[in-house]
Amino acid sequence: MHYTDEIIRRSGNKRARVDGIASAKPSIQFTPIGKGKGFKERLSGDEVFALLKRAKVYIDFGHHPGMDRLPREAALAGCIVLTNREGAANFDKDVPLPSEFKFTSFDPDEIYSMLKDICSESSKFDEYSKKMESYREWILGQQYRMQVCVDRLIEECVTKREQQKAATVK
Image 1: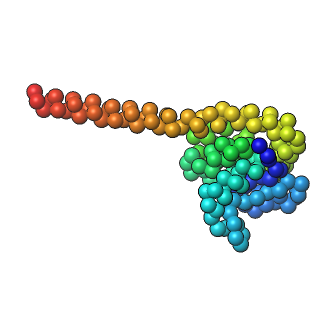
Image 2: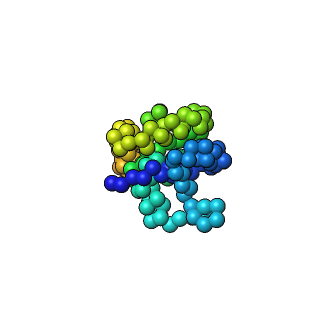
C-alpha cells in the first residue's frame, strides 16, 4: 500500500483553524474532500475512495451529529483517523477510536506534533495503524451487529403478535 504525507481534512466550522495549521506547518500537505472552486463540489464515491487510499491521515473536527460515515471509510482505507470530542465523537460507543486520536481541545501544536509523528517514517505510521485495528474491526462488525438487532426485533414482534392472538382466542 502506498501512502503519501497527505492529510485529508473535513473540518466543518473549524476549517480556518485547520487551514492555520497547514499554513504554519507547510511540511505537511492538507487536502480537503471536494473539488472545484473552494473545494465545495462533491466528489463521487470513487473519487473519495481514491483520495482516502492515498492519504495517511484523515482529520475531522466537525460537529459529529451521529456516527459519521467518512471517518469509518477513511479507517477502512488505511488512514489514521483523528477527531475532536464534539457530538457523537465524544462517545466511545459511537466512535470507538483510541483516546489518543480524539482531541479534547483544538490545540494546533498538539495536533501538528501528532501529524508530524505519524508521517515521520513508515515504522511510526505502522505503529499508529496497529492502534486503529480495533476500530477497523468494530466497523467491519457493524453489519453483523445490525443484523442481530433486526433479528431480535422481528422475533420480539412475532412473539408479541402470537401472544396477542392466543389472548384473543381464550
